[in-house]
Image (cartoon, rainbow, N blue to C red; front, side, top):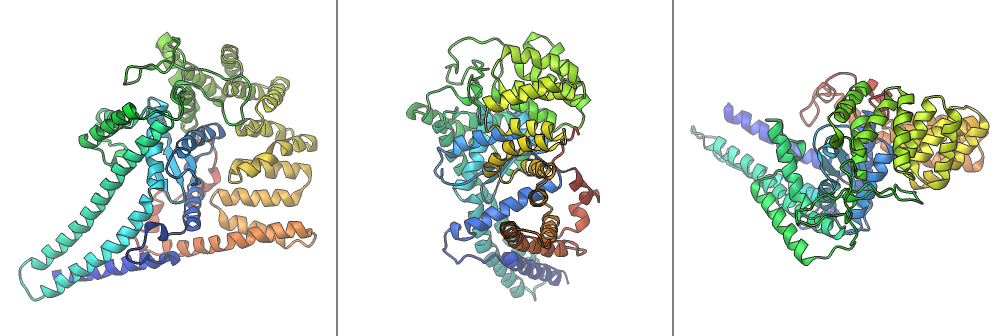
Length: 566
């Protein structure tokens, strides 16, 4: 009876493996085919986009334009010197305090807030992102998909044959054969992962050096994570769970970095980004330099002139911004920064002061925030980050005239800056008049061509059109906003309702019908998946309750794209 039970389980596992391979219309690649044929680029892009939309549905994505533009700028700096600079990537921030990052099909790379907070320098953050980029450029995800399909089924069939052959025996030979087969499958997966990790390290270190970052940062990052692990006891960072690290791997990363440092001249001879404050995308005019001469492992310094101990890098500003926007309590963050400032002048870095000012704004103490930002803007004139923080604090404090003058000046000085345009638009739309809505449309419309998948831009565009009297454009934009937030069926229903109107022009109807055609197969696929998950036990062994343990996932979608502090 025991052997029959094992036989039944094995047959079930084999069938599930085959069913999963054919699920969603995915065709198994032929034996000997390259990994690139496992999934088409369009399929990978669609998968990655669907994952991002689904994460937004459950409020797992931190959609902040300042942090997003910084992360994408850093990411594309590495992509531009990689083996595949032609690939399209999407970098996004995940609302999770775990120290982790991951790569998904289609070039989607997620970076946890916890990872950003844990990194000491931008070089270390760049090392993790370079590692994830290498997973994509080296086709590790596709190779893993193809390898699992090629190896798991033959091993399972061999185990099945062994069980049948030993069916009449009274010893444990059949069970031993089964466990040997399972161990072989697991070992193949481990070996495959180890090979991928080593290759991603090697390629990532090369990209770091080419982009002008410290190639030793890869080993530094591993050491930083291990320190966090020792401090937290048994709490192993998620990155180390999914990217296993041992002493040999750290030593190998250091050796590769040292060899590159001796033999390779980086493309850029400028100081690494971690030691200087680059302008945000769309910035022009005076550059804000908050560099600190941090010693590198080779003994050289990144800045020639000495700097005060209160200086910070742009990375550190974005690190504090991410920490605040992902926090559960604005008052708790305010207490944190207040305590940091009380520790002494050495703790009063520019990044900590910025975090304190920003936490005052989010804690609804705008007058105190204005005072803090006034000092920062005077000390660092021309900084779009500090000027924008000042404008938002002034707006909240009721200093409307001063806030709008500052927004207008920022829009002229930094044309195309997404963070400034969105903040200015929100202030304009709060007036709820047609004239302000037209100004908002002039700000947003050019950005939509560059960032068509930004849900905040779509929502602001919808509201601006609504106030300006263009109800059709407003309805289209609201549908796009719902779609990008993981509510594809809601978006499709909105578009169908709009399409039923008789007064649409030819061009309006063509736009709406085109989006209906594009969304329909996506919605049908979601319905199919939801039907499977509504069954008492899904094919992957997890019930619907296990996927949503708090039983409030539907309600969570209502708070999508809201800061936890709101």
